[in-house]
Image 1 (cartoon, rainbow over the protein chains, first blue to last red):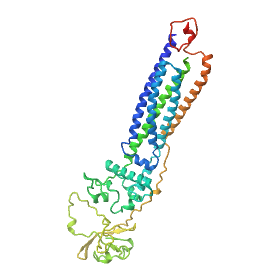
Image 2: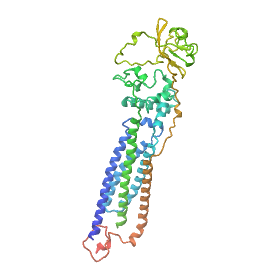
Image 3: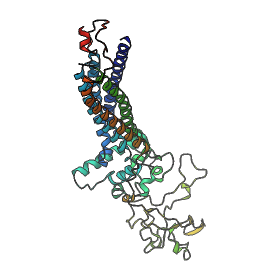
Image 4: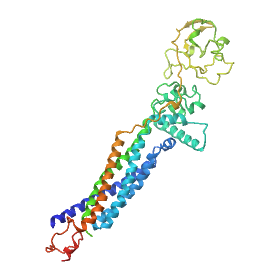
Length: 260
Length: 187
């Protein structure tokens, strides 16, 4: 019958279109997650030191899921065009597994983003920046990572502390143990530095005279990239999964209606 | 001139800078007050030269804090205070001008970082919505997959496929597309 013929073709067309979109989104997901894993802002040592770097794990899963989605979408297109029950069954089963993994990645990224509060970074900065007496190798390595990252952050973003230089004054810290308050109210990198890396006016910086020290906090420079990372993985993955849900339901319907 | 507030009533202006009763190193144990940042009139020109910061910092010099040969050392204060300060202008050792005593100044006391509550992990609404919706979608998919596999047993025998030809008689065209029922096509 012409009508059911059309019906078949429409459904096939829709499924092929759906799979093409899944394939392209898979590639995009892989590219996005590779970008995040490469850590262009150099914030990974801070997360490592919190021992809570699961948003990176989520990005790693995203890389493999993206690639799997691309491969499976090709399988799906072939299966729909050939109307092969076995191919489509394999496609459905593998897609469900990939779906589960992507779900895990999205939920992990969204959940662990909520742990990254200003207080977490403040505590870590005070306890680890320029820490001189480290307990073991692991501690030493984490502290060095934190120190290097903060030095770079303060230099590049012209900022100081998490919420401001007063963080160094309100709390004692590992930094304060080795650097007394009179000479170093805050680390040297909080001062406005000239081209050679020495403070423009050291006394002005120590006094806190506006213009000679960085008075804004670094939290925005930290949370901005981390938010983009976590939300990028979580919500893009969510969008892909919603679309995949529809395509999978359509494929299951199609599969149940074709004969051998 | 820096001193503890308790010494204000008994204070004597005429003791000059550099004497043991006014040395930084003796403050606050043996000297109730100390004089520091002593300089000549030349260092305070009027009008102020551009680029100069008109602030004096008490406690800048850390190198001479224990050096008894420098009694006017501008060393860091050890206790949190409170302290009171004033400016004193001397001609020789005779005070010629002075400001009033400042209000008591308390130095900051720092807290330990372990007092920071880092466990502020409130789960945002976005994360809860995402988890719920994904879980529901996945459950629907699994249910549909199970239904699809279970009903597959019936479809071959009883149920009529939407895309199958109902009668064996009418063969519009010889269609090798195996979506249609095989018996119909073989006619």
